[in-house]
Length: 175
Image (tube, rainbow, N blue to C red):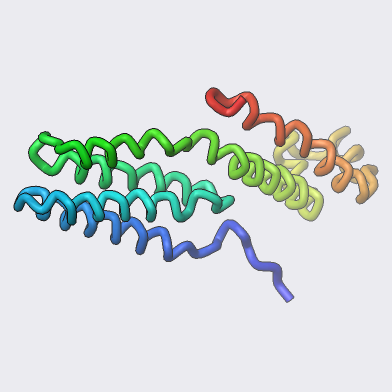
């Protein structure tokens, strides 16, 4: 039985959520332009709610899509004409609650860990690829690679985890 490739995961909900935010932006702008500020305000709140819905997903692309959804709510809060009434100003201030860098912390750690583990596993299963990366054509790298016990690869995965886990802590705004 072949293992599934986690990098090939399909995320159709992200496109749907983005499309909904675009529709809400257009509807909100239309409502604000026709003086229906209360209805427009509900659209703004819904855009921000949808943007926050994927906050805890440990997948980097989910966070990138979230970042592109915020402008839909911001543009709608301006009402299309640059004039905001007080409730729209309060809705606009909701943007301050989003902490994209902080939300990325766990996601970056999970992605980095998976990436390092995948590279180590790939090289373990494909020693000829290591030879090509090391300059190819035999010699000391091939001898060392052949002599390495299989458990060493798992040991290296475990050793890299504390280093990877500390990377997001060093990002601005997370520490």
